[in-house]
Amino acid sequence: MDKAAALAEPLLTARGLKKSFGGVVANASIDFDLRPREVHAVIGPNGGGKTTLLGQLMGEILPDAGSVRLGGIDVTAMSVPERVMRGLARSYQVTSVFPGFTVLENVAFGLRARRRISSRLWRSASTGGELGEAAAAILRRVGLSGRSGVDAAVLSHGEHRQLEIAIALSTSPKVLLLDEPLAGLGVDEGRRMVELIADIRGPVAIVLVEHDMEAVFALADRVTVLVDGAAIASGAPDSIRDDRLVKAAYLGEDA
View 1 (spheres, rainbow, N blue to C red):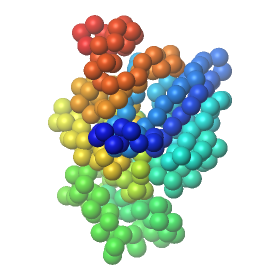
View 2 (spheres, rainbow, N blue to C red):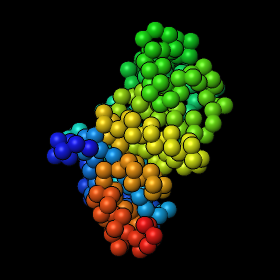
View 3 (cartoon, rainbow, N blue to C red):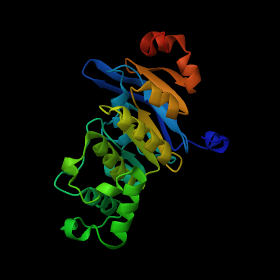
View 4 (cartoon, rainbow, N blue to C red):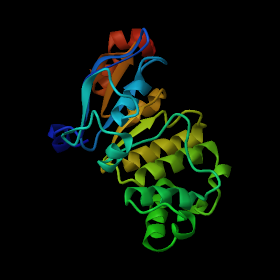
């Protein structure tokens, strides 16, 4: 992230986000922001509240208190589709693609949704002309151009992850929320995923939830640590790596 981006107004801001499920506090008054061109990583132990935070940013979970602003607009009460149209996209821990359709058709479907083109009988008309060219360009960007005609159901786990990011990119996001994109990947697949995230950052600002600390410290401009629903630290990667409280709560002394 360059100096100008660091001084710019945040693209995504959360203030005082609170969420409880029964007697369990998932998020305890969290403040969070994401600046243009930034990768802001969110780390912490399982059950720390990371996925709940992403759900509230995306609009899938309504907060008990607090607010979310996207591009300076209060989107706290907006639905997921409304936030997508304003430039927000997300990937998930469990990959979600459309089996029975080709890789190219999966991406074209996202393009049609973003452009508000009717999806009726979309399969036969989605992969030709300008729409097909745009989908093919996105597949080249994520390294799947050689798999465009393959049924999405037969992709490897790593390729599913790549395709899900391609679908997210098809909505022309300004902000991309990535929920454990390296989960379950082998060494080579993980390396390719880190390279992909590094390539798409910049035009797209990224919130990265991830347990792979090598990837986090290679990619992140800032890191926020959630433990028991609370943000116990936030700052530059080196400061987080050296934070005694973070070491005790999550990273361990070997960090």
